[in-house]
Image (cartoon, rainbow, N blue to C red):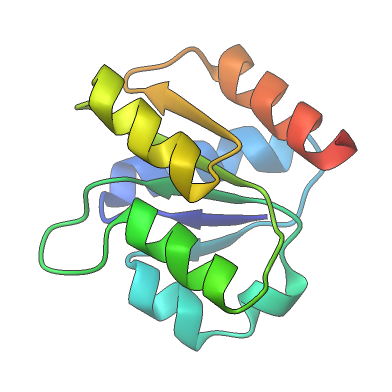
Length: 117
């Protein structure tokens, strides 16, 4: 599992939640740092923020992954989720999109469904 979010607090809390499920987690503060790592080859699912100031968005990350023929499920999270954003995320191939703050169980459900799809 990989978590991509510019907010250290969000990364930390998601790390704890996902590790409690028994998964290994890699943390990244930007989409660029994720793409430059070897985590793309080792991740079974990616949880990414949509809006990360000063860099690539979660939707742009998803598009880059698809251009690289990467079929890892991506779950997008955002504090600014609108119907237009959800549609854009779906068209880009996001597995699901969650609005911050979200219930941890909703994320767990998305992860489990993504990994068992």
